[in-house]
Image (tube, one colour):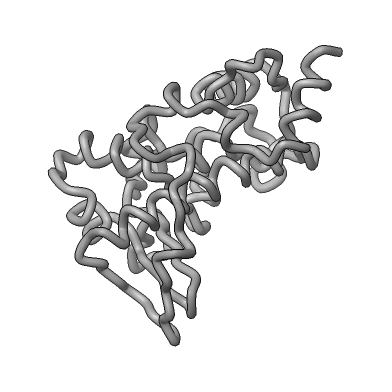
Length: 201
């Protein structure tokens, strides 16, 4: 996947990643053999940080009216000192709340979170991983900023010391879809220049 236009959005990135997963022959390190991920739920037991847009989209699908209501029911909020982490909730078996246990498939697959859409257990270049991490972090930062305005559901806390001043607005502020978020505003400038340069080759 390459970024080849200055107006690329996070949705353009997602579309390119999903197209690559479907068209390229990729080796799956955790489940070698099958040519697709269908029926493999190994990644469904991992930490899945959420972005503010993930929460908006999933709230609509699950018919939850408020961000606080969605966070309370479908996420785990961990606060360690000044750090807040909001991830998809894992149930008692250590698997994602949205996993269909019988079929080992995702119940919200068409609208699965950003980290789920951009993950495959195949080797990836450092630049690709840096891009994924930048989008995830900025999107979660905006989610935390909005969480600070709710009733602040906390599922786990260790010496909490969250300061609202540490959570300024991000490019995700006021956006409810990924096609409204310019990619160049989310990634560090150096990475953006590298992505454009690679896209021109």
